[in-house]
Image 1 (cartoon, rainbow, N blue to C red):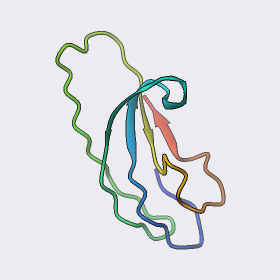
Image 2 (cartoon, rainbow, N blue to C red; image 1 turned 180 degrees about the vertical axis):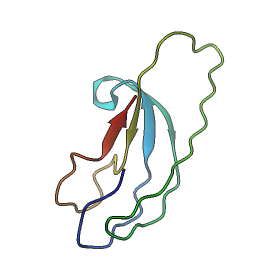
Image 3 (tube, rainbow, N blue to C red; image 1 turned 90 degrees about the horizontal axis):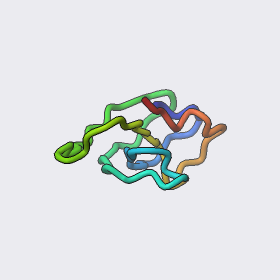
Image 4 (cartoon, one colour; image 1 turned 60 degrees about the vertical axis):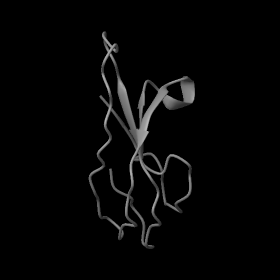
Length: 81
């Protein structure tokens, strides 16, 4: 995910959740993230202990999960798979 803006971004820690976060998804973790220049991107690494977590899962990754960054549009802040 990358911000689309003409202004420098602030550091907004990405989060990862098991399920849709706004609908009761369980927070897996939050990563440290640097402030990014417009159009830049970075990788986030979150460790998830899968012990006892059998079955299907849909993971969601959210950039700017706490709505801290000023952006032209926020529809590119979520990915799932």
